[in-house]
Image (tube, rainbow, N blue to C red; front, side, top):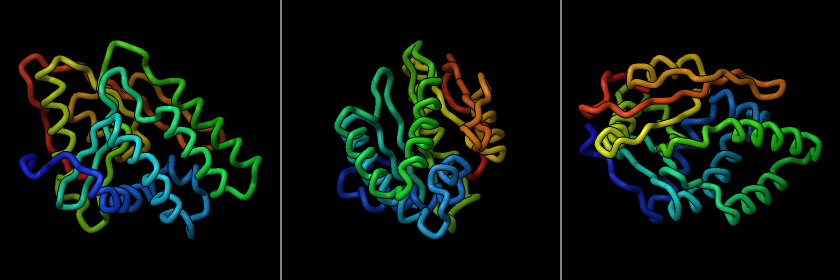
Length: 209
């Protein structure tokens, strides 16, 4: 199944943004950011549109044509350069009517980012999502395997933040271990997870997401 995965291009931006917006519509962290359920998916679509413009320049964006996508930051590179961060700040300023709520969310997200490990150099799984109709078919597992095989071959660790209890067992099957739980202010609990490279290569396990 990993053979179907390819690098997304700017021509895929709309498709990838829609996939991730749908995939994260019920995500606990994104539900905390965008609390208005009636607007959430539209807000997420705009959010991912901005993020992806930065990710195509600085990160790795992968697309599974079955209906899944992932954004990875390579070692020592952040998806959020100054330009992308500024565009995202401008977008969210327009999405939030309540300035106090916007400041609260931005402070929470900044605290979350501040907890990222500084070293050693590693790949960071920023986002991985699947469309509703394709969940449970192993597409998320295929996207994980695709990058983790590269991590193993090149000797890089990997890092992610599991945003729900449901996701943690999947990541554990692929060798990730919880390093630290954390909670957003008045928000959900999440878990920072780390995976050391496997000398013999390959990512164990297979589970749908």
